[in-house]
Image (tube, rainbow, N blue to C red; front, side, top):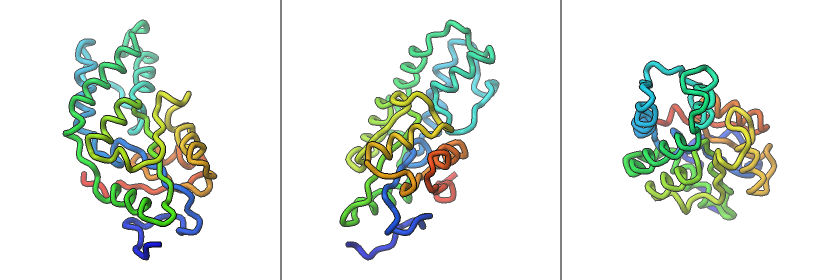
Length: 207
């Protein structure tokens, strides 16, 4: 077993750590810039500008935001939500190589894999699977995680705990032994609702 310490202090001691669950956008990969470009392209045909739209809490999945925009009248009630989601996916995937990995967080994931036995890891993200796989592949991280759970595989997005509970279930670990690595208040709330310890990586991310 390696005797090196974790590159980031964890809220659970190693002997109680069953798994690390990572958010993707803004946690492992800095997608803020490409997401803004993608969203602007998606909403432009409706005459909408990002600056004028009511914004959800940071970390809300695109599909959940669109539902909110329909509810408040910013988008027409008969809008093809699935088509908007596919449009957004295409815009993000086209720019996936422009989104840099966040070094300290990636180092934490690699540290988990270096233990013997390794600490199981998963990605639990509000992105769709096709977008998540594209981002991970573009950053060379696609072989680093044992499980990937995406928004299109659970009935509720964050702040509901579904994503993280599904990841823990697929890894075969108890929620109480999981540390969730997140960069948004909504994601941290989701993790706490799942009964998991949390690690806020915003101090380790360049702003």
